[in-house]
Structure formats: structure tokens, C-alpha cells
Length: 103
Image (tube, rainbow, N blue to C red; front, side):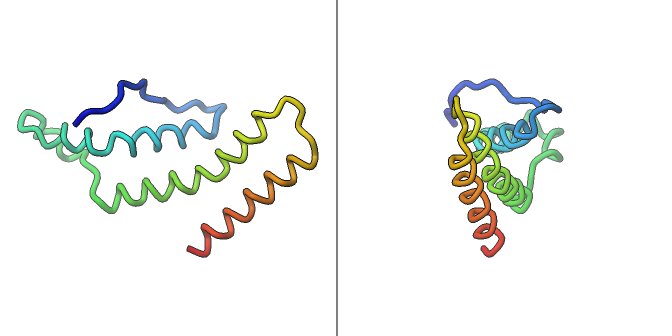
């Protein structure tokens, strides 16, 4: 399995989206992690392997956290935030949460 070299994110108590970044990274590394745990010399670590259901739950949480992450990112990228931009972003955030809850 070939992947890009990356630095693993860590939890930052002052940044709520650090958990989103950790989940996103873990999702990206799903296949390499499973390949690593499947190696014979790593059999003592097999107990840490996530089940398909656990991977699905992780993916669901990542999707849930992606919604506020995108809203905050959109708002923080503005130099001069206007009320109009804030309301439009909040409306998109709210509508996406509602749609996600209906799925």
C-alpha cells in the first residue's frame, strides 16, 4: 500500500476540530493500518484492529464533525466578516445538519 508521507495530528484541547483532523487522518490510513496489523510479526497487535462496524462509526463521526469544521473554516477565512456572510454560512450549516439527521 502506497500513501503520502504525513504528520499524524494530535489532540489540541483549545481546538475542537483537532478530533476531526485525527479521524480524517485515521480514515485515510485505514488500509495501511490494516495491512500493518495483518503482518505475521505484528500478531500481538491484532487485538487493536478495528472491526468494519467500528470503521463505519468512525466514518460517521467524521462526517458529522465535517459540517461544523467547514462552517468554521468558511468564517475564519474572511478578513472582514459581515453579518450577511455569517448568516449565509450559518444557514448552510443548519440545513446540512438537518439533512444529515434525516439520512
